[in-house]
Length: 331
Length: 223
Image (cartoon, rainbow over all chains, first blue to last red; front, top):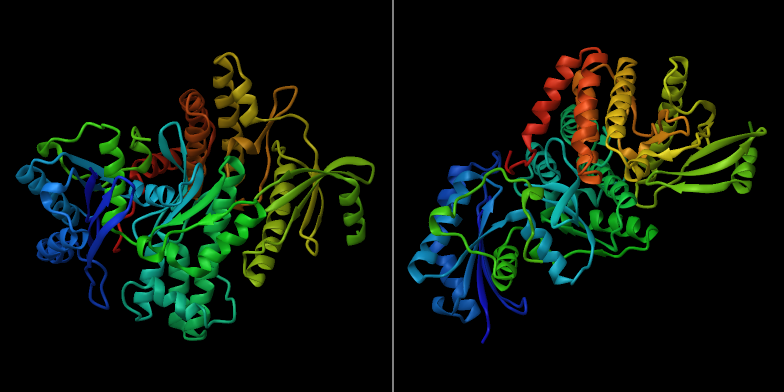
């Protein structure tokens, strides 16, 4: 008899559902992504409305692709937070509904722990330094005393925000990361930009303001600005990661989250890792961005470790929820 | 001073620490025991950015060390700087790194003294308009006489802004939280009291620090 866990992700623009089995096989992974208009960022209510309209379709596809019936599912996991309230509520509502209707145990999952545990379990890593870079997070974490401790993080905006907001300013649209990466790959000249690092913590907002004002002056090419932005921001992150590494005893490096798909960032981390004799792991690109799999794998671990499920009335959401608040009892 | 001389004392010296941005050697500099700090090139970094960062940080660190020396602040004395080689030669301080010193402590009264001394030290630093930017417990040295010195000004800068001072304190608290979870409160509570009493603008700084620490800093995407 196999064990099947359904994961539901809805912290921001993605509604993702996935089914995994006890061997961590991904049986299905279905997503619908809300795209804001060119000139604006995410409107949480718009996004939530979009996600709710897609929910029925995503759920049916997830079962169909996995060739699993809803009765076969052993447990349901949903992203409890952190994220945008209206979006989180969609996922939590679906999870509560399915749990009541089909009488399945319900597990709340921290979204960032989903990203982190997915890459750790995928490559069976022992003690990685994990760099999580996305639109929602920019942090450097390592596991000690049952918690994913945060050894460094952004003190203002995230790396994903930085790239998206720059892309929006120069008219590239959303999500900006891949478009900035493509533009930067054609650049040739480095333009000096503010480089702000405080120990193992980072600040990106001064960098954003500066690069946008240089763009408006119209003296540099867009590709050189994109190159300089990436080189500066990524160097800051790699330096902070290296600083964290010198204090810890990690045996590998993992990078995850949407920005992990950037090949320049990955190449820089590989070069830094080589100096320390550490391999750098990253997931197939599709699994870096938000998805139901990351929620399902944590739910599976909780279910298999006999963690007490939550009652439907306690299946709430947490818009703000620090990674290091979560005690990892299922490992 | 010739670069060849720096290379020569480096080769004769002993590598004592390989950090994230520099390598430290214990050297014999003109007959005196000293630390040679070399900012080495980072392969992962864009060449121009790499050169720029190394030169700027070396120059700034030298300026700050000299400023601190002039103001009797307990930090290594600057002996010599070379911007072509991105090299700084400074006083060698003998002692234990605070991180290890804390882990070897047997009685908790000492933790208050550490909090007290560091509170005074950081207030003094900030009163000189210097922000350290990496107040980790591996960046303090405790000598045999139990005097505490601050080292590694590689990320430091001049600023009188209370927000920057608050960030300095925030970094210190974060490091205590993760590296010394059991001792953190005892050290930090005393630190804050003493800092408040001794630092200029401490009210603004501390208020802003509390604001920072409450933010939780989980940024929701979309902005």
